[in-house]
Length: 549
Image 1 (tube, helix red, strand yellow):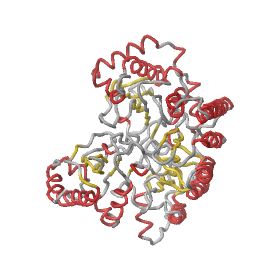
Image 2 (image 1 turned 180 degrees about the horizontal axis):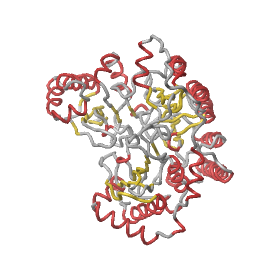
Image 3 (image 1 turned 30 degrees about the vertical axis):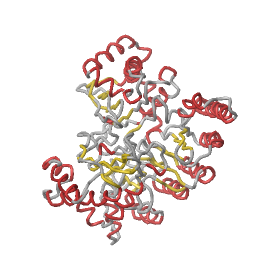
């Protein structure tokens, strides 16, 4: 992973001291709430329902063992002994004190972490494939390009106050594991007929109040032009994006109002106007970025040698659901689940953080990765170490063998924490975990995604789940709207609203009714999304609302 140089450290340390001064002026009354708002947001500080929340950047989801241990220390000293993994691969501390935030940032800076641009109307943390560099279907490792974008966009003066927040995702594989069509800009590394590396460029995706999929505006952008083209996109957005209405300020609204052809033409015109060789990425710059993401020292493993697997059904379940093939023979990719029954999805304790750091050092070259599904990946595990790792993960309650199943729920903190939420998310998750706790039944259902958002901001990305749940407010009471048919990846699509919203206590029964229709109507081994596409939503709707919902 990328290692800071002296300039990087100086920039981050200066930013901490700058924010400390801003915080002191705010606390003393010298800065008004209005003046302090954009300053704290661009340093990742929110005011939540019960306490301030600090969002910390985890560039493209990668964490070192030292960073995990530092985060554990922050949890213990400044929070309540745990933190939260977000759907953008970042980390949130939900119970911080205003007067201690600068101390937290100073502590994190010692391990090359910060909260710069984790909020505000700026370019946010660039996300990527959590399996980057190890996936068998990968054509080009996207992480060096993510790092180039991170360095270019951090504290960029021209794009510090955009009409609205701006999110970029980059992949280099055939399978889209970063949902690039749901970002303001999505980039996929590809190779043209001449063997040259470049990008497909999508623009104008996003969820929230008006969910939209991005539009492909460039079939092949040579890699040298990456930053120049991004600059052109952002300049068109900065010039024409709505600033009078925050609900219409995202670039997706601009692309939709201009039309993809007009927007693309304006980007191309701006790009051609400013496209000079001095702004191109050189081979030396690309090689420097790639030098931080070299292949680890994989051992020579005799993959043909048979290894006797322990006779444990629980272990076999875990292998089936939490372990994926690695591009290097004899190695595997392991997902540690943060969906243990009785805990909030994505929450991880300080003790678990320390032990994951130990596991990363023992089994995976000292690195871990946050995923958009609020889990943690150890990307380079010897297959001969899998049983030992599973035993440790079980002791840490990180081995729920449910990755990709109905109980691998993605969930925002909801009304229990967030001041923006209309309804709670965590009680719904808890009820679903209790209702669907039979592993054999979950495995029979197959891959089935479920996401729960507490408000229309859609932090849990409920629109792109096979089954989505959205909290809404009805005269001060919590109700929930159901959506069906969402999907991520190459065939990304937005789910459709099933019908009227329902009260909290009716949600588990409604979900069970949806699953029952699926089981009754599916063809053999057919996944939920295929059944839904084949039969439509009416049968699901009839069942849900015919049972008193």
